[in-house]
Length: 193
Image 1 (cartoon, rainbow, N blue to C red):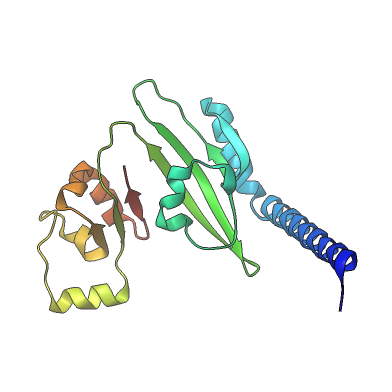
Image 2: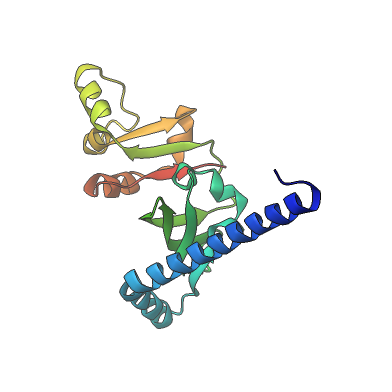
C-alpha cells in the first residue's frame, strides 16, 4: 500500500503516462489521416486555390462553435476532427458555409462523414431532422399511413423521414432541396435555431 508522497508521485506518473498515450494516439491518427486521405486533400486544396476559397487542412473538433456540437452527427465518443475545410465567402449570402470531412475514431475504427454546414442569422426554426428511413420505418409505412408533409414529393417520403417538434419547422425547406435528397440516398439534414 502506498502512503502520502509515494501515492502522489505514483498518481502523477500514471497521469503523465495517460497524457503521453493520448499524445501518441493523436500522432497515430494524424499519420493515418495524412496517409489515407492525402489524394482527397490535394484535390480540395487545388480546388480552393483555383476558386480562391479559404482552405484549412485540419481543425480540432474541440475548438469548433458550440452550436454545431448539438447536432446528432456529432454526438458519441471518440477522437473527433475536421479535415479539408473549405469556407467559401459570398457577397450575396448573409450566412456562413463550410464544407469539410468530419472524422471520428473509436476503437481503432475511423468513420468519415462529409458535412455541409450552413449558418444563417435569419433562420428561425426549432430543431428538425431529415434522415434516411431505416428498415423498420420502411416496413411500418407499408401498414400505417401518415399524412405527407410535402404531398407532391412521394419519392422523397418513401426514402426519408422527418423528425420535427412542429409541422411549421419544415417550412424553411425548398422542394428543390427535397428533390435533390430524393435522387441521392444517405443524406441527413439537421437544422436548429
